[in-house]
Image (cartoon, rainbow over all chains, first blue to last red; front, side, top):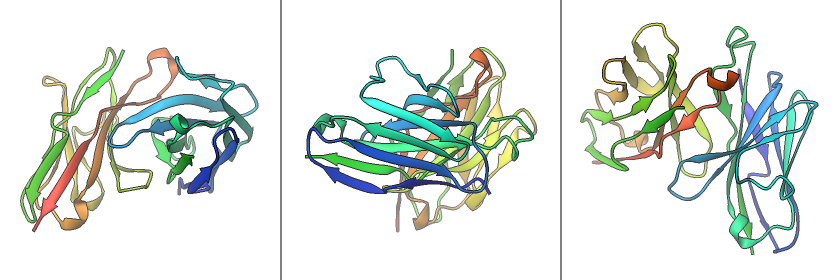
Length: 120
Length: 115
């Protein structure tokens, strides 16, 4: 259980275009999902917390108008990088917690395989 | 506030040797502690977690970690390294401060296993 998928696994786009990344919990319902960004050889940086049916909570320094997050259902959250620029190139990883597995205690996050974004 | 320090950005061991990856944390409340492994171009996979039960936690792939409150440490060990263990390892801490369990990650330790 607790499988999280991401689509696409990699994407290359031109500068100025927008890219949408999907994060799905395959075998559980996730009221909360998280979006991280990871630069090469570095740790994960939390970008935002995605809440089903409400607005995402962004970390300090993350532009909410640039990184649009939509959590439309209990199994799907999307991250849209708008007007992408080369500096947005990175590895984007989502995660989700499964209250059912943890007895209601959302103490463990399960991660998707990541999406490699390259902006030319 | 919580933070994680992973000593050593790289650890190199011979195949069959003991693996020791160090993690120290700070937390104002009893923490939950995690070790994750990341293979190239992949997401993070949970190795093991400590959530205030037994202080010695056994995980997947033969790894284990011991929670030592007096040392604020949660070091990861494996008795005998395999080539397939070569990966990036992240220690993470989370607590209920602020009402959420969002983890804070260390900078990661790259484990290199040579024949």
